Length: 267
Image (cartoon, one colour):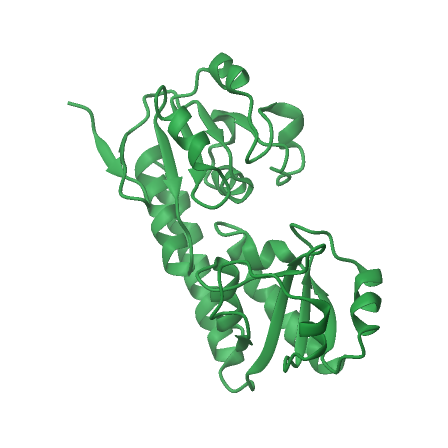
């Protein structure tokens, strides 16, 4: 009788057979797989799976996160495909699950991250590495909570896109990390990724505007563009991978957040 597991959407997944042939359609999950010691079993990734840097040279690229080549996937003969509710479309999941085992993650906070890593532990029999990663994340988080405990709360807007301007809103992983940083996200009561007009930016009560490095590659010229609106908040660039990549990247995220707060205090 096949051994089964539930993914984060409570869908039943049959454990992959040995040897694993994994396709990852989620960049942060690809990085996690490598850190779990599973790189040799990855057969396909997306063009956005940029960590570790060498991976795309050694693995088949099957497209993006929302546009994939089903022909390439078929040729790779995977026995498990990893998706994410937000990163990948319903059509992709529905099409793939007709022929393959498809695990779908749904991550909104660090508790979900720990749960996902434990699911991968069960899927791929990597208990030792999974335990090391989850322990590090928990320890780093606890240390950061001590660091941030007496810091004042700061009203922020977190920009992820331009033309139109878009923000990170409620029920996003970004929003949960903003809260951990004592940042009060002024768009946390809106849809997941609300738009905002230049006029609304002018009227904001935010004390700090964060321009993420991804998915839109904000740069210094965009700081100047927003400052031309004659607003009072500080405007800075932040590394979007530390705010939006769940998984093993969280091991280094809290050290980055400490440096970020020190920088904010000196801007």
